[in-house]
Length: 307
Image (cartoon, rainbow, N blue to C red; front, top):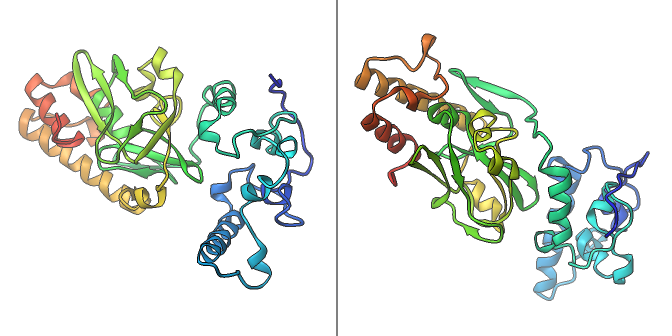
């Protein structure tokens, strides 16, 4: 197998340039294409061109000649189709035998296992809502999971800080195997605190392409570092745009979290006459300090009626 030897490039070329779709364009986002306006614009034009061709219409003008960089590379002989990890300067030359369907590629999984899963994911910035941390640029679900876009149709998923503070230390985790399908709104994974299961709904619909091996060895990382080392899994989403419309983003997420903290205060004060924490901020491991019947009510109130 080709060694995963990192190569250095002084002028990283955009994937569209390497594929020959455009003559000159250099990457300024470290190949984070989801953050690149140029990539979004070309993808939009190429989708329009493809739709016209499917209708038997020749796309007009110079833009009409544009096609997706993957489609352009797939016209080359196999020996001249570079693996995307080579294009991003991570490995020496290796061909792509999968027509750039990375979710079906064993080498892509191998690469992720050796280079990505052990890296600490660092959110760019945080908002604080009554002591609960929210990373900027992440989508939230009403069931207290977060979604971060990793690629055009692939996302990373974990639980939010509110859920982590509520649950405290957990003992085990149950996640579907790679290749299995999850559906938005239905149970995606389950955390266990002692023998009590806490089921989290999947924030998106798709196929699980990767599970965080760190949490298999140390489930406590899920709540100790929910936005970094404790992420849960990666999912390939064929209709990501549709799924994201059902999630909360930026100001919506902040308003939602503020309402959840207020609801938590009300439930705790009504049932036990205790505050969520000194000064009103939720402490870590609230379920460890309440009676068993209230524990079930809190899980039902914040994680959904399936408990």
